[in-house]
Length: 257
Ligand code: HEC
Image 1 (spheres, rainbow, N blue to C red):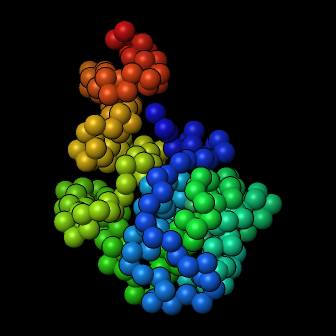
Image 2 (cartoon, rainbow, N blue to C red; image 1 turned 90 degrees about the horizontal axis):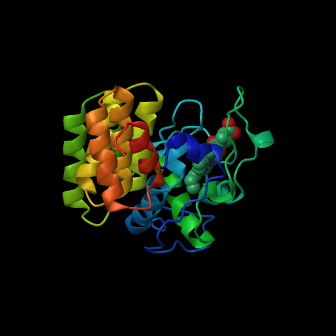
């Protein structure tokens, strides 16, 4: 239902549950001591479970032409210090301030489109800062590993990495539900329907009671031309959320209702 394109074309606003610790406001002189593992995990939940992932991809690894890699040490809008990163995220990047030589298509809304208080954005900034540090947190390394394996089509290994991380960090998913869905659309957008099915299937397995992953899985099967499964999964999504008008429309289109 929440498709990548629709999300990025419209002004992006997503409400993310407020949770976790809050980074002290004096973010200017960040050290590995002030950016605690707790803060990194809280920032990761907001980043990878919210809007940032749509343009900057899992753990900042870029996604083609949409937005820059946040895990390298090249910074276009600040010096890469925590406060500079925080100010960029708070302000966003308007169309005329986009620096890429070939203009990127979508500007970045203030707070990257995240509808959370500034204190929570400080956690996101700490997470982004941590992505470019010489020794990133192990959780971040595992996010990159998951991304790399999935992007190279090694889905069984990607799943294994994901599950191992769940054992170590039972309260934090490497990629939360909304982020995993956005990741699936990365595959669908590049024409890799089978890759998208793998990602959406993983999301469905992780969140069997959530309607949106089923809707996306159905969309991928519909794209593949497997209408039987598309109908089954749109129906499943609709059972879980009777308000899902997208599923109603698609079921009509598929001749099922
Ligand atoms: C709609 C796409 C989009 C979304 C969503 C988005 N960004 Fe961006 N972001 C961009 C673009 C475009 C730029 C500027 C690129 C350029 O100047 O070439 C940018 C720049 C940045 C920069 C500065 C990078 C640098 O090199 O100085 C940071 C930091 C950043 N984004 C973090 C975030 C975070 C954190 C989120 C989520 C809260 C987010 N962005 C959401 C598109 C997006």
